[in-house]
Amino acid sequence: MRKPEKHLVDWLRNAYAMEKQAETMLTAQVSRLENYPDVRARMEQHLQETLEQQALLESCLTRLGTGPSLIKGMTGEIVAFGQAVGEMTMSDEVVKGAMTGFVFEHTEIAAYTAPIAAAHAAGDDETRRICEQILPREVEMGRWLLEHLPDTVAAYVSRSAEGRDDAKR
Image 1: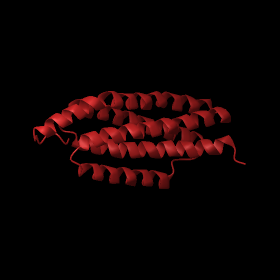
Image 2: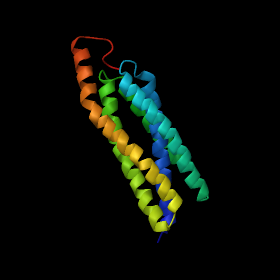
Image 3: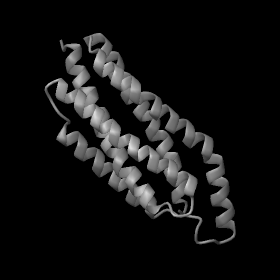
Image 4: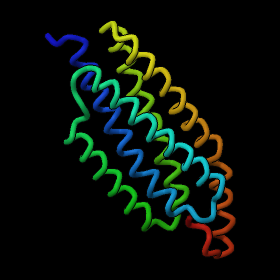
């Protein structure tokens, strides 16, 4: 039987790998979003949050005597790169990016909920506090994406109907 600390380390590594994947996805989106300044600004903000969250997770893992999983991190970055390349080829890149981001944020919400519970079971108040600090940021980003999706879609559809070059991104 595994101790709660072992599960906690596994789930912290998962969360870290997801943050690395988010960094890759957000960096690609920010570099390509030319014509949707509100979306770009929010993605830039969340990219900075993502980098801060990586550092917080690394501090938890270091305190627990370990570090991020190289394999999980590389796998997440490869998946994110493939996703970014795939979205670049789509005529509705901005819409697909917002939809993908919404789904990803909810996966991150789950990825932080698990270590919060595991940290509680392991008596690791510091890790629980850090994950509880990060979780609302992910919830807020998911909420923001959902709230702004109708306007993003409307702008895209309008520009696309006019044959404008600025519709895609």
